[in-house]
Image (cartoon, rainbow, N blue to C red; front, side, top):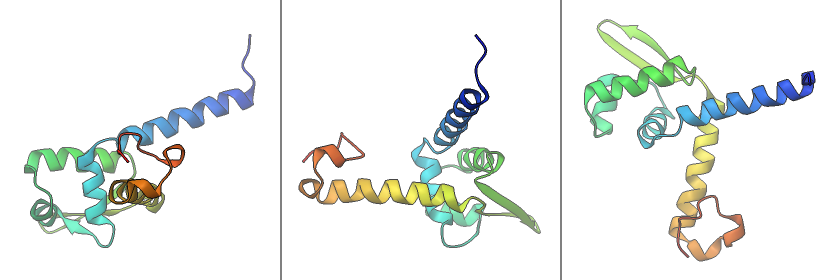
Length: 121
């Protein structure tokens, strides 16, 4: 049976969404996005904020860059990163804010409305 164009398009939407969620699916990458929310930073500045090794940070930065979430530019010998996809940052900020509320005030969020079922009330 031949899939309709609408079904093919729907499948592609889910594939692309899963790809984005996969890119954002590590705490380190979320921390990087958080560090870059307000302004661009060099790799050395990010290393001062995020407790990791330079090779590990560079690997995550490269993945975020290749996915189009971050942009970069050279300034002499420094590589400066900035947010390219404000929508991805907004998505992460919304999810992380909701989870923080659930952690801080678990009784204020009914179980049926929680994003994170692992947060105990």
